[in-house]
Length: 157
Image 1 (cartoon, helix red, strand yellow):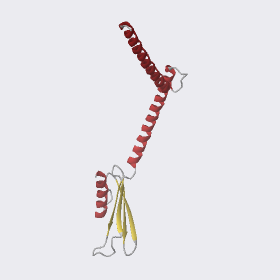
Image 2: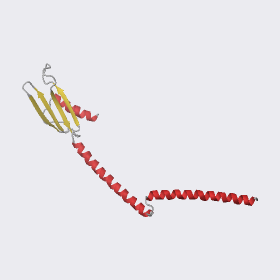
Image 3: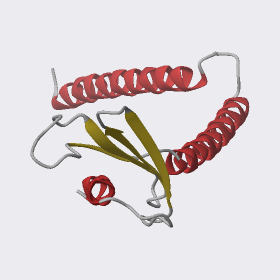
Image 4: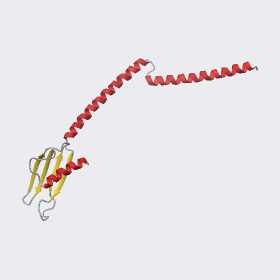
């Protein structure tokens, strides 16, 4: 066997290996193309148009979700977010126990209502006073003021 024969055999083996490598690479590319197109008979333009319409639909859905979230956020701001209840004894000297209470129900802007229940020997008296931005047009008891302040303070913490 001559040197030329050895070179030809080596070159042939190398070329056969190179062709095998390129064939495997081509098969891999075909598999990826088929996975992208999902259906083998479609051309690339059809697949891309399909993906584009799906992306547009997703974009529209996301915009709708943002609109719904914005509405929910606005509704939540109007709801009662700040609450506190203070129990107290309206009598001096400790008679009767802590059976009376003041309850504050406020929204995000500290607007709402404070409800007070006073237990006396004669019966129960219930008072409701409107609150606008943490203030009332009617006089507040010390317990009502403290309850409003604690409701506002709890939200800040």
